[in-house]
Image (cartoon, rainbow, N blue to C red; front, side, top):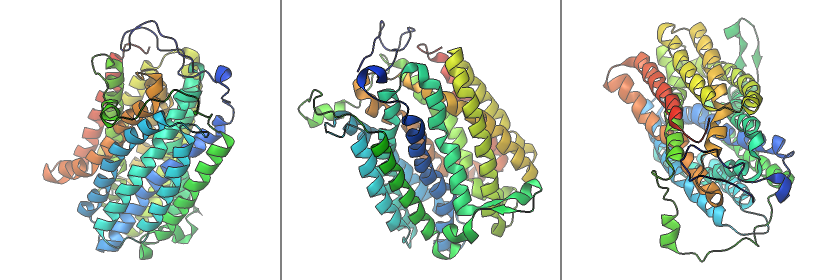
Amino acid sequence: MSSTTTEEPGSSSPAPVSVADPENTGYKVAPLYATLPLANIALYMLWLGVGVYLLPIQVIHIKGVPDQEALKWPIFWGALFATIGNPLFGKLSDITRSRFGRRSPFILFCALVGAAALCFQANANSIAAVGLTWGLIQFIMNGYQAAVTAVMPDRVPASKYGRFSAMIGLGIPVGTIVASLLLAGVDLSMIGIDARIGGFDGRFADPSDGGAKGFYLIAAILVAAALIFVVVSPDRSTRDLPREPFAFVAFVKGFWVSPREHADFFIALLSRLGVMLGYMVVLQFNFFILLMYVKIPQAEVVSKLGTLTVINAVVTIVAAVVIGPIVDRVGRVKPFVIASGAGAALSLVIPMIWATEDGMIAFQIANGLFFGMYMAVDMALITQVLPRPQDVGKDMGLINIANAGPQIAAPFLAPFLVDDLDLGYKGLFAFAAAISLLGALLALLVKRVR
């Protein structure tokens, strides 16, 4: 793999031209235009389908009432194990030597084990069991995520970072749309159309069985996506790459990245952490926001939540698809990061002053627009500040802590703000706006990226 730099990491010099140059190494970029988004869509169907729809349904099924206190523990344990799993599996994939490459074995193995764990969770009958199985799923599927995320810096040239960042970012909104259509359906009466799309009469989000069929469906989709990826976009053999004797102490020390030598890397991590915390602290409580803040009847929450998430996702897709190529053409990333964070913060003011179904529709449109812009440039920023090409998997795993960390904090932070501090949901939106804006502004401090 080729990479050229002229300055030490963290300096103001340009980033390496690319971690890998597919034209010289034999990687084919064309199949990745289809397989990389598909792999991410399946993953975010899991994160959002279970996290937004199936976990609340399962908790209500077990407890008999909407219990925010019970919901926070499965989310907490899941996100905690995700924080461990992502860098761990990323590092393991970095040092893997096999005829199937470094990433493909982990993509397929983790998808198979994660699917089996989803089938176990479908039959969980206590909050403790839900927390245990969701923790296992988050741990193993973050191995899948670490391997898939490393594919871009492994195989994609810097000249295509913007469009691939946008396509990877599409995993969230497209995964949201597909999960919403399959699990909840979309109630178009919210936008004045007397129709309903998808939902399959509640078959995959049935409160009577805790959404068990939904778990089985997502498990099957994950395995199918992993198989398609490793077959259509095969990795190259790594058997001829240098091997270092395994030493546990050296392995553990390998996770350390010096904040002084790689300041840009840590600033980018903190920037993503702020933006994602602002996003997750609202996303993970959308079910209860609609139920307890907007006052939508419980029987209508699932379908209306589906409609709102699809609206958000469609706008996000449009924004990401438009912005990604523009970023490549302009050659600048930071202005888009800052604009997207500021816009996302402003969008959170809408539900504070307009707590109705129409207000939530307006919020989803505005939030989707700016979050789509952010997803189009986030990976382009991150990929240019990675410390070392040979540690891509581990370093992307560390960056992905900025996804898992907010999931750990959100289930405790949201009730603390809403109930303990008695700020209500308006206080929750205000906090989310402030932390999102702060995260975006941190990008100004990244020296290596324009």
